[in-house]
Image (cartoon, rainbow, N blue to C red; front, side, top):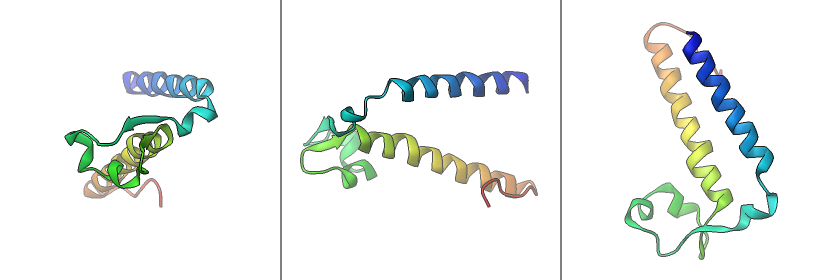
Length: 89
């Protein structure tokens, strides 16, 4: 359990550093231009992108926020399977 707590603290610290260094003006920067490579063209990311491509903000939404929500759903399901209550409701 101590290793898990240590890992959580390391991840949180890295995330906070990343957020502190994030330049708001860079959120509109195109980070993957159209046409998209195959690994992106059939994903949710391609749906939210504008005509030019995926912005940094799109990437944060798709690859960090939504990805985390999927894991939360998996955790909630696993907790239900072992008789525990959910964490978000």
